[in-house]
Image 1 (spheres, one colour):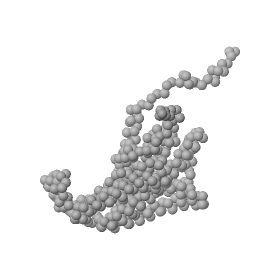
Image 2 (cartoon, helix red, strand yellow):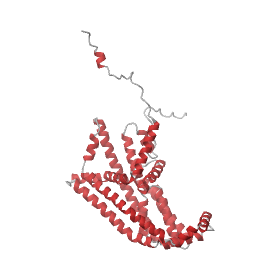
Image 3 (cartoon, helix red, strand yellow):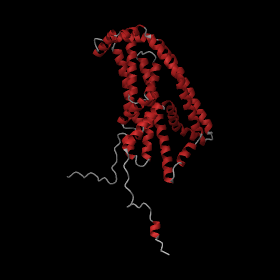
Image 4 (cartoon, helix red, strand yellow):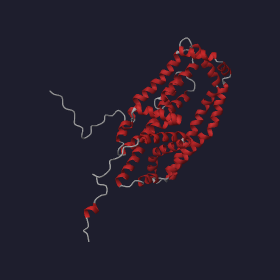
Length: 382
């Protein structure tokens, strides 16, 4: 009988020296996968938007559910209380806005006519407006439209009524999914953690979930409080300047400020146009726009960086491009959820091996520490 070669039996079939070299990724396939993912997100927006909102709100409200569970409150009761609170808050918001918004819609034909007259009076001052108005005067179709400005308002109202059932369905799906996520307790966390194999991976996954929960909660909580104070400040400023519907301007500032950069610019433009219609002197619209811009700049450059933690600050270029991308994919809703999704991606990048460079790229202006193998800079010669 031939002797048994135990060394051959215990030899790993793929020894380090015999392992084939790692194949580089197929970048054309990666590019096609990214394009397919973006196309799928754009096509499934009506289904994915409420799910994304519900998941983000779940991470925000899960600490509340956890604290109430320690006090003996069942998760089902907590979920129902949170969902009903959000539901009645939405109803109260629409009830508050319905009065000024309805008055604004009814006055829209007069506002359009007044705005057209204001722009015509400024033809000698702004050359671009002069050219645009000359083209409109030469176009017979534009003359017909200017005679009946109410038709555009009526068509806009009909389009809004047509899209209302879809919006209500998405809101209902968001609230129902949020209820089931909160009522399930820690089941979602357990299922995610149990999907990993090793104990180290389980701990890393649980740590990532808790950090996402803490980061989103602190970020959205701070931003919501800052935006509420901003809305109050804008509303009081518009009231002091004699603007119509200052409450509507406050709610508009609160909502638009969830959109980085573009929200403030949009608010300034709306305030300027409304002031242009409301006042005869050109100095008042400029003052209104300057006041709105000053308050939002103070909030964005001083207040928000002071109260929001440094670790939640993002690369400004990445934030702007992300907001633009999600605006192209999901319109206004995409611009609102762009930064929270960026926070989630940043936290995941910090906990997944190999994605640390992505997390560093998404981070703000904090200096990157030197690695252990980086030699220190030589001291200056005396």
